[in-house]
Image 1 (cartoon, rainbow, N blue to C red):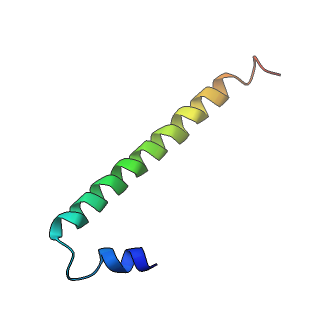
Image 2: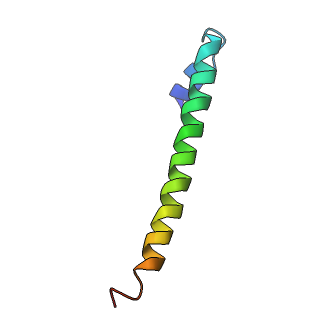
Length: 50
């Protein structure tokens, strides 16, 4: 939790908030895409791998 406290401190430059927000957003979108694509692959392979 000390890392979050350091990021949220007043001494942090404003750019770090933008960077954390962008990286978090990209990670979230990547995870969503991975789950969706994995779901499509698993549903397509049901008949072949029984």
